[in-house]
Image 1 (spheres, rainbow, N blue to C red):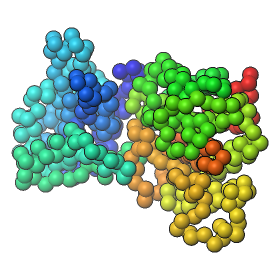
Image 2 (image 1 turned 90 degrees about the horizontal axis):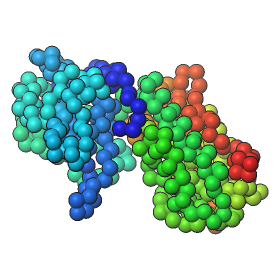
Image 3 (image 1 turned 180 degrees about the vertical axis):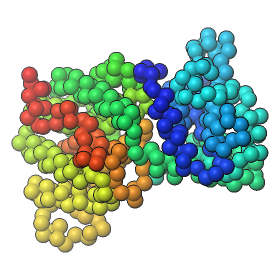
Length: 429
């Protein structure tokens, strides 16, 4: 891996937190992600399933983690099964994680090769009940490809049909929503790398540059700072492209007078950051562009002030909508009279601001968390309001990553330029 070695205590502490949530006598199973094929003999780059990483730090395919706190054998309370290397694999793929290295990374002492899994698993299944199995239960998940977890669930229930099975995801959504000190430091590192990439762009963007050239500048800066690369598909959208919320083609030329919307950020050690900025391709905003820019910035700052323990995502989004409504009236995009007559279930501001303001952030960009749970210290949220005016070929979004604490929130991206005047100054220095 490119990132610096992480402390095994992070993963040991995570497993201890997880174990306290299990019912007596239970066994929990976690699988690595597959390496996804392309065509012919090609494959995509491996990205680890985030639950097994959160619990073990193991960042390798074909790994299985078992957690069995009430095992009769102390050495079987935590077990990692790893892919055994051989000379052929070493020649073609390079070194794989050894048993000793797996213990150093995870803090787990019992390591077996994957070839031993079925034998050991059968022994444990004779002792345990219930069995916690994992699957993707994110509200926004759309999985048409069968995952390793899905295959394992089928196999396990076929082999052991009389066992009681439980869902592991409610526990993971509860625990992963609260970040430890070490996790916050990793997210901050990702944010710091993102800052370097953004500052690099301010010296690079000008009329005539292509969106994909900007993407290339970012990936260069991210990778040279030990990131795997983008935490998500980069959005580099100039002019009208900024009004397409998930624009990822990044293949248009930036023109004088355009505003360039950037939704781009680095990951570090699998932890994500998430940034949006809007900058003038010519190095200076028009009066209209700056007015809209500052309106979005006011909404963002008002929203950040509401990201605090005790609030909740539903009330929060409704309150942010009111802030946006006020700004759109000032910009004469909405009329006060029309707003007074609007359907409360379909507010008019959604024509210009049609997405949510915040989501959980962590190992996943849209990280785990229950939308009905009140905000708590240790949660990390994005804050990303925007105004999109298709008739004006203009879209502006600002986004920072916010840590909630008992003493107020902390902006993890406070050092990344956001004031319109500072952006202009840096682009014209």
